[in-house]
Amino acid sequence: MSIAPRIRVEEVEVLSDDWFVLKKTTFAFLRSDGTWQRQSRETYDRGNGATILLYDPRRRTVVLTRQLRYPAFVNGHDDLLIEAPAGLLDAAEPEVRIRAEVEEETGFQVREVRQVFDAFMSPGSVTERLHFFVGEYAPGDRKSAGGGNVAEGEDIAVLEVDLDEALAMIDAGTIRDGKTIMLLQYAALKLRPHLAVS
Image (cartoon, rainbow, N blue to C red):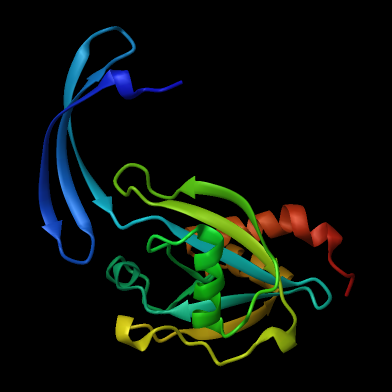
């Protein structure tokens, strides 16, 4: 059911248009009790993105990355962040973009990818919708060292971790990235029962 008739935008002010776009919007919202309420919200538009969990079903391993995330650092995470490969769509289709992004970050050329869901990661302030993928890999699929795009400030290390170890890293607080936790939990529920027994 569309909620568009319940929202009347009154004013949009661009607060910043540097790295991404920060806007302040004043609008009226038709509440459930039939009254209109004036509200103001800031939205951070960084575009939509995609992320992927590469897994090797034979060896029961996954590919993750480790890199600097300055916002996490200033909020008390004094370490590089461990993540699933991810990137912004930049006007490309999600599957096309995640194939390019995973090769840029990890060096792996993915054969087949499958989108498993999409989600708004921080809907209270960020407009981004993230497309989640899984894809199988084998050691021979790695065509380069990866490492990311130096011009964009990326300095990415590639990790290959046993799936059970990666899940334990969530419990230990070593993995704290939301999208990565979601993909690893998906793997535990949907992929692990089908993986080869060690």
